[in-house]
Image (cartoon, rainbow, N blue to C red; front, side, top):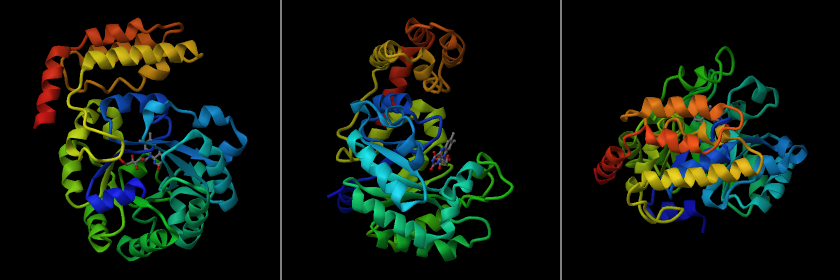
Length: 348
Ligand SMILES: Cc1cc2nc3c(=O)[nH]c(=O)nc-3n(C[C@H](O)[C@H](O)[C@H](O)COP(=O)(O)O)c2cc1C
């Protein structure tokens, strides 16, 4: 039984960090995993062609500590997606997700991403083929519609087609994508959110795992959605206010995928783990900044956060920068106060 089936059966909720190109790389996911044992972590979207022809190891390898981790694929060709899944199987991802929500020009010219919302039959064929070759759950991340589509009319059929094709879960970004005239960034902000519609889809599909995404900015909002939905997915808020993830396990059941609760966060242990991790990255040819660029949002709103950010964004980017900079950045934060507040947040 996949963890999505288990989640549905037991009522266990899933919290996911959204796939985000250039943001949710392996170093980002390693950091996020230190803050939450249970959050499901998505990769950046990786295009099937890139896996087949590109630098596989760099695109697909990740640390065992990142589990559970889902690989998000972009593509619209049955053969290529199947081949990409076969190649990725060796890396041990816990899920394969298909991107049906990304509106960028680059993605449209390959006719995949959000424009596939117009062709549910083809997406269903893709999912059927992906299920055939995948030994792990296959999921879809979509929008509520594109352009002049009427979401309330098209979404029920789209979801039914995905379910019919065997999709194990569907994550819905609760706004349309406008394929002309808006940048990808505007497409995450301008089209209005329609949470009511997504909640209604869940009520009408009690046996289908449905997760909601889009504009959810804190754990209180996440909890409210989880009272209706099976899963909640946060993108920008999780990345930009990373410390938020320290409260995730407390809002989920201890049975959710990935293990047990993180009772409290030990910030000094986190510092030491990140220093050791960054040392390994540097030793294998990477740069300190590859790790620290994902850490700047750790202490948003807390005493010393500004200095923490400054140290990480300026000093950590210098050539040859070493991990003493991580220690210096943590020294700038009132860690004792933060540990106390973190405990209160989790208790509350
Ligand atoms: C920098 C960035 C990159 C993104 N890349 C992807 C991607 O690779 N695949 C995808 O499905 N969505 C991508 N998205 C969209 C997010 O997954 C998410 O659907 C969107 O940000 C709305 O959620 P939020 O309001 O919680 O951020 C990206 C978003 C951002 C901010």
